[in-house]
Amino acid sequence: MGEVARSLTPVTREELARLICERLAAYVGVGGVDLNVATGVYSLVWSETSGQSVIQHNFGNIIALSESEPYWVPPWVNDPTHRLYGVPGIPTKFRAYGSAAEGMDALLSLLDHRYSAAIQAATVADWRGFSRELLAAGYCPDCAEEQHANTIESVANQIQSLMVFQQVCGDDFEIITGADVVTDPNAAAGTLYRAILGPSNGYLAAGALVLGPASLIGYLRAAKRPRVKTALGVLAAYNLALVGSSIAYRRKST
Image 1 (cartoon, rainbow, N blue to C red):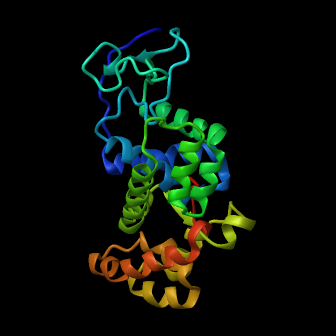
Image 2 (cartoon, one colour):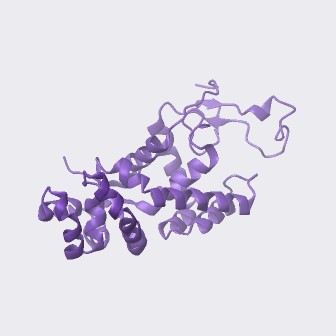
């Protein structure tokens, strides 16, 4: 297909979080999506683009290996005033994707196959290790190590504290926690909590005490009263820290 225009394809914070939820769920199958991995992918994309400088849905600035595949040319190729103009080894072609889903799938596949050590660091929320392993394996060769690590860590911590994934993906995905992630990824944990507690948000706090912290995380997104969500938000964030990488997403059964 050859060269295409260098067109921006921006995404909002919410759109990016939902896209990661959906494509990770499709990529890993029924086993669930590790919340920390999702956060790592988000921090990588957002730290480089802020969602606004994504070009042709290429979320990881993946290099085009052939002129027969769609690609776009970066500005430093033909601009002698650009700081990267003529620098040896700097890419001159990047892949162009037809949709956001296609672009995210390509990034996930790349991370899975070439940067597995970075993914392992992300599973335990080691954001500086995530950055270090990415750069060690050749990602972003012109990035400064300390600055890259600081940015990745800052974005990851922010996205976790704001609980963006829980808010954006909660309608279509349920959170599975603790033993359900390890022993039975198909167990409808979130549905079970709601069935026990019933539809009334008045049971939310009592149910959290009876069933433990994991039940609160699985059920908090169903709360309709803003004050209930606000009052329990800090507790939910604390619970997230407690269970850590034992949290995963799974698309709800239909």
